[in-house]
Length: 337
Ligand code: TXA
Ligand code: MG
Image (tube, rainbow, N blue to C red; front, side, top):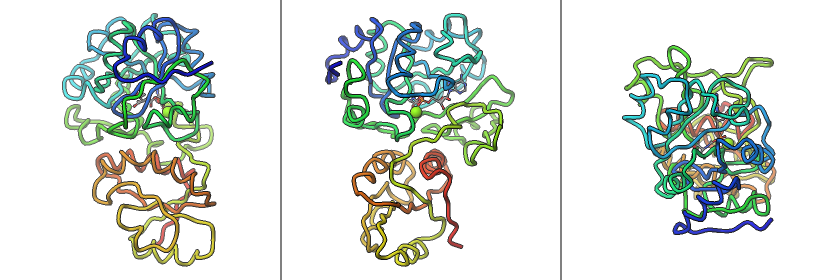
């Protein structure tokens, strides 16, 4: 199959393809999504094939107006209305009880559905023009870092999907925050551009799922199936070094002669004696989120065996950066204290 590269003026074409059951990758403010008609079980099952995604990992359904939720869920909780008023459109996904309209392929057999209204202008235009809700996971091959440019999508999906719409770089750079409203109190399943602190400011009490910062225990029941898979991983082995920059630098110096690279903050590379990729400014979690996946893909171009990563703070959007980086590192963390 030839994969068309569409520009931002070709949203109508993208909408038509989606309506006809084809797969189209679309830009959003978080990462690129691999879209299909969420009400068409066959189209949705093709997403799993193109990505090599495990069948038991449910998808997020994207809408362009709040009212489009109504037919998709059994009832709209009060909490969803409050969160939507504050954070939609934007990088927040809410889980609710699903209606009969949602195919099992979307919810992976669960009785819930995840819904998001993206803020990206092109994404919303495409959803509107398609006239249907769009199921879309991140548009990467399962396990690899999520794509934040159309070129990343092409690298993974060329020949496997009908089209990619190029909308430039994704602003946030990590996937949306996922919160379930089915539990009381609501539970944060995946941190993202809307922070834990912001959610609490609207809802009062919010729990954080253990899997956000820790590896899952063997045989644990998972709230979010996506948490249990190896994720966001470049081919290069990544190890996180916890501690200040002086200790980090000393550790890398002790590895002199080995085939390594640094995954560090901007400016630090000048003081290091090895290959390096930077992922944002130390004191600025938004720049880190914006660049993390880009940096992880870049690492694989260096041809090194191991990359040693600086550890981000877990405050604000930093929690999302930390959550993705520990998975990219398969939870290999060395404490330099
Ligand atoms: O920013 C994003 O959310 C991007 C863009 C394209 O919108 N999409 C995205 O989708 O990251 P994906 O499939 O890569 O991640 C969806 C996550 C997975 O961890 C999945 O397990 C979880 O959401 N999820 C989806 N439906 C769920 C449900 N009903 N219950 C629990 N977790 C669910
Ligand atoms: Mg994903």
